[in-house]
Length: 477
Image (cartoon, rainbow, N blue to C red; front, side, top):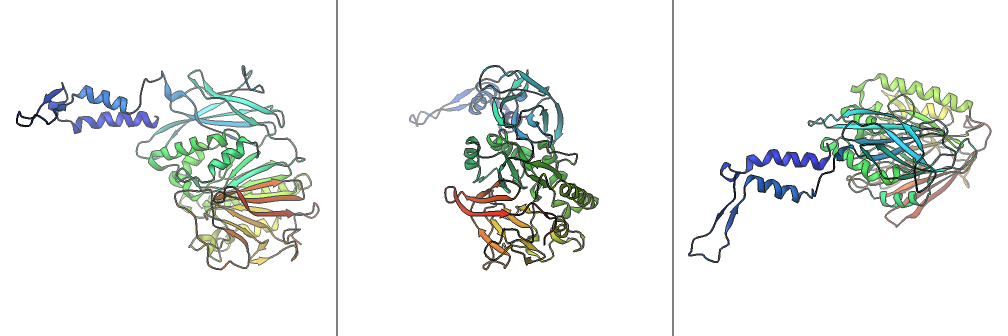
């Protein structure tokens, strides 16, 4: 049920309890005594008058035939299959799921694709019902702009545009990367919308923590967040990983609302983009063990198999990039896991089981994106607290360890996170400003990272090139 509709019903249910029985039938006018002729008369409104007044005060000027069948919260994702794109949206009643699309900006949309709808019942006390629709478009031509709308005969969305991803490894993708963006205080969102309208990106990586929180207010906060990101997410594949703020009801809002590749409910998956293999995983399996310790082991073995395959294909896609929410390292002034020497993500359960640092180092991961800390921090190439710069003059030219980027300052109600007074020896750049990261994968050897500051009107506050040779990419020598 839409929020305004549920609000209206709630008011109708409450009114009988706040109006006395004598005032629920017809209006009566009670004037003050003649000794006070200047006093205005008091009107005791009737029950039906109260309903009418509330009806118009809610701004309801006439209800469409079936308003809840109109699609909203529209967003794209890449299912991992070349020439494809998945469209996901929400309605409030069950409807058919169809996307009409074409290449002409105006006129009819000649192509059709159909999909499925699934019922999602939020875990809050109202047990609100959302119908999540998924349709995958196939046979898209690489680099071509498409126009589409989604819905059914009961209601259609407005038209949106997206550009199909290029095929193969020989092109230069551009991405926006960030985490920790909320419904309140989403500082980076206006600039991200403008960037998207200008065609600056091919995809978005949202590194965990959405809405703050999607389950709040019986999932209405999640609804509002998905509406807010629609100008970006309906035009670009919006790729995600779970964060700690998605944990409620076993990550049910995250699993239901997003459509990621693979068959692990979006908790871990991988995909290819240009000369890069991108791996998304859940750091949260290490912390919310009551949902199953087996998930830690299951994800770890999946990661190892995926990294083995990625290295077998490294001649075609040299870069291996990971994204997970909670960092292995950070120099923030709090008590988060990344501030501890034996962090769970880095060393694993009990400091020895299924740690990720050794795994990522063994398979030559190039770049690791994190969030969780509401700040930006770039580390020197690092392994086991030792800095492995390529050289003193060019530390990121053929580094001997992975590069970590923490980008969690997109903006939320929790504001920014302070740093320790003095940076750690392995910390290269720290920025306590709202913003987000731009990633340009130029080719198989050169990768460009920039940090955009929204506090400084879009100024680039960090700028670095990561360079690695094509040969011997698996091993850090």
